[in-house]
Length: 214
Image (tube, rainbow, N blue to C red; front, side, top):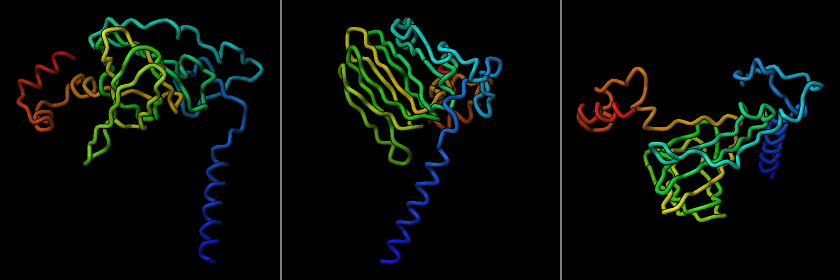
């Protein structure tokens, strides 16, 4: 009995310490305009100089141009677009898809993503970590919601003949995006073809051909 009480006491202490560590010490921290790019350790604007536009963005109702090689366009609203998001740990994006357009496999290293379909039909999915590498996938319709765990490779694909639109929310003010093909084959300078041939089990001509596309 004593050991159970000790465990509960330790669990309560850990929970309280986490809660206190995450406690916000002020209403907001709108970054100084000249320091917008520095997210960590940023200087806050004088609260008396904060205005409504620091917490405002307009235009997410406008469809993105999907005339891209992937047939999709992501319109992100992060801390760079809404300075008032600084320290809040949230952001949002609109994703537009042409017919059969794809948001190619990518990761968000700093955020979990929750996606809601507004129009069209999307196949979505993510792949679990090594060594299982299990594909978790589903077809979504308008009103459906799907979650992509932080850091895992995931994608969205329009499986219909019409446009598709989705909104995504993130658990970070700046979740980051690493598109796998761009990162691996579009690196500057190039990753050595010797490394890539071994990693992808193909010959160098195949690697050169893919790199040339990026």
